[in-house]
Length: 267
Ligand SMILES: Nc1ncnc2c1ncn2[C@@H]1O[C@H](COP(=O)(O)OP(=O)(O)OP(=O)(O)O)[C@@H](O)[C@H]1O
Ligand SMILES: [Mg+2]
Image 1 (cartoon, rainbow, N blue to C red):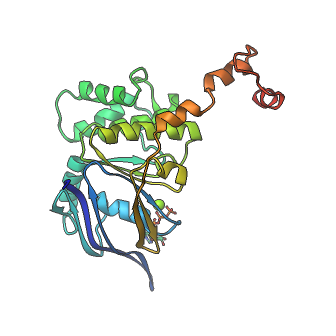
Image 2 (spheres, helix red, strand yellow):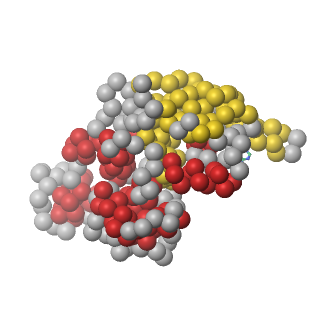
Image 3 (cartoon, rainbow, N blue to C red):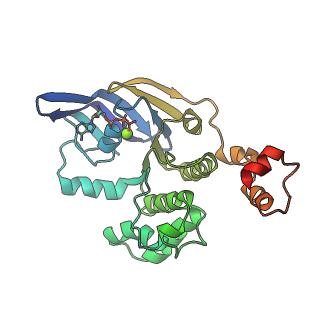
């Protein structure tokens, strides 16, 4: 049987706001295994981010326990949680969370600095090459597209060799093609043996994962394996070639028989 990377036992979270109590999570029981690729889905307010924050050691539960690689984390203090985070978890956020005036390379080096690692530059460069950004290392986030910025964020998340990568709506701000490219990178990372857990509102994104867990009202509503996960690279092959569109817009018609509407739209 595979190693259990995350185990939640009766995991609950309440937020008390004045005389109101919000039950964000109401007793979650789940195991996530090494090599899993999980999509967390469910309506807004169903507890997805709360769950990610708990398994990501960014917050503590009101009740229950969470084991990360067998370590009980519910009662750890802030320092202990930070230690576990550094060792086990890489985060990818919807809005990338990169340092704006710092090069891609330096952004990726940051977790290595916190960990006091040696050969930081070399290690960071390798992570950037893995996500297909070998040519853009000296660019700052403002000089990169949204998809490229998210690749930098993924490189930063994997650079410490964490056991699992957590993404809260990592494709939420990206167009279809860029989303597919990011899912391709996540699939690569997962094939290399890392556990990946992402929150998404989009069924099309979730179909790339191996397992879909649906939340509702702070509980798990369903937990199902995906029979044949979609391969992002196969989807990308079927999408219109963005370079062909550029060629049309500058007047060199290389795209096959573009329709009148399409040309008008592109100009
Ligand atoms: N810091 C907080 N203080 C008070 N209530 C909170 C806090 N964080 C979340 N909640 C509440 O807990 C519930 C679950 O929130 P959560 O952010 O986990 O939902 P979500 O499933 O991630 O939603 P979305 O899809 O909109 O991101 C919601 O009712 C929310 O208002
Ligand atoms: Mg959320």
